[in-house]
Each structure stands twice: as C-alpha cells, then as structure tokens.
Image 1 (cartoon, rainbow, N blue to C red):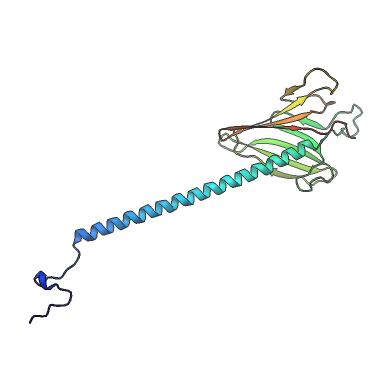
Image 2 (image 1 turned 45 degrees about the horizontal axis):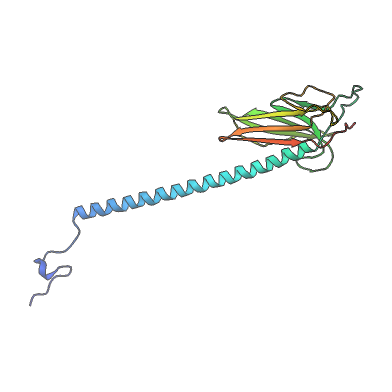
Length: 210
C-alpha cells in the first residue's frame, strides 16, 4: 500500500496542488481594486463631512452677523456732535461704509453707548468682507470683528424722509448727505454664492440726543 505524501492528492499523480502565477496576479489585482474603492469612498465621505461642517459654520456665522447688524442699527442713536451749535448729527453713510452711535455693544449688549463703524474691505479674488469696529464712548477700547466674508458685493442704502406728517413718500439713497436728519431705515445688500440677500432694518430712535 502506498501512502500519499503530505500535501499531495493520490489522484493527481503525486503532484502538489497550489496557485498558479495567473491566479495570484488576479487575486492581487482584485484586492488592489478593492482597496482603491474603499479608500476613495473614505475620502469622499471625509470631504462630505468637511463640506457639511464648513456650511454649518458659515450659516451659524451668518446668523450671528445678521443679529449683530440688526441689533446695532435698530439701536442707532441720533447723537448730536459735541459742541456743535448747528445740531449736526453724528452719522456718516456711503455705499461701502456707515458710521453712527448705538446703545448696543458687540461685547456688552445694551450697556452704555458705543460708536460703530461698518466698512467693506476686499479680501482677495474679487471678494469682499464686512468688518465692524466699535469703541465705547469716552474710552479708547476699539475692537474689530469680521462679519460677512467671501461676498461678491456688499452695499448700504439709506431711507430718507423728512417727517411722518409729510405726505410725500421717502426715498432710498446710496449716500447720506443730510447732517441734520437721521435715516429711517438702513438696508444692507449682500450678494454671494449665487444668492442675493437684502436686509432692511428700521431705526427706532427719532429724537436727537445730546
């Protein structure tokens, strides 16, 4: 009786069973393709998560920025310039900047008075950002904060009307030139990401403060 050698099949003439070179190459190729597919899927998932996080962060920043702009403009004060007998108001407005006094602070909320300056500045690649700088009246503690960024256009407009008894309709102007009159509303026009947003904010105060 013949005992077959270990690893041999009695019916294969004593030849050992194994993988051919072609079979090994096919296996390696399949494993490599599988690894590439899995790695690609992981990269895609990672990028999707990053895009989602960036979008959430952008939306949260925009929400906070809208709230800040709305609160400060609504709380604008028609402050009379110091020692000005003509009664000219502390307010300057153009298409890319606006400066006024407000009783709402970025850091302190409704505590005291601050001077506020919004300015549109380029931030590269034809895009613009909106910055706000405020300073507590009577103190030298200027602080700046970037609000909206990466915008194609940021533009201010001002609603002018003499008084409530006037039957004539008011008008929107791109530059404020009347030093004795305070705007009724301020509009912020934002264009970016294929969208246009128009934020119209009423100014609550009417009476000039000294």
